Length: 225
Image (tube, rainbow, N blue to C red; front, top):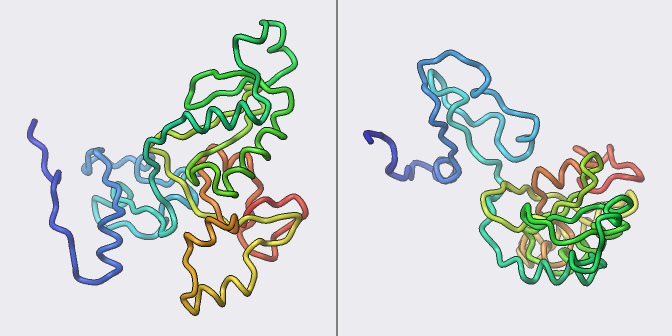
């Protein structure tokens, strides 16, 4: 196999150039083909991929960059996540019958069926509360899918997650006090993550949230900012 560009020299022209090269996404699509689909940003990539940072010329759109506050998840041990799900009311498969699936939501962990739950939204709230309290890894994702009547819990690697501000009852959890502490270098974003002020959300969980772009757009049912 004859491929070029597998290894590249890290550019140190500026701090922004270094960050841009370390978060670069290079597509294997042929640069000479004039097709707009692979060069465009998909709606599910909003907030995950930078819409501006792309080169000019034939590589336009084929070379993208992650957003500044997005990360790629790594594989996590799902034992703790499985125990947390069962402690939150997920019924194990050996204790249910096929008729129980009729009035319940199926619960999947990394695509594997682990049980059912009669109140899926209560399960999601409980699991997210554990994540914000630091009991679960910040990259664990919990999302409800109404059409499939399922709850998807993900702790596998390769998912892109973005950092969002948590909103409680129409009020942002990030206050001016937090911003002053951050400006005075008395804390970092990791401290906010441990306090449950911000959290990482992947694409599946974004579809289960109401995200406001600006502070003025926050409503009573808004979940993130």
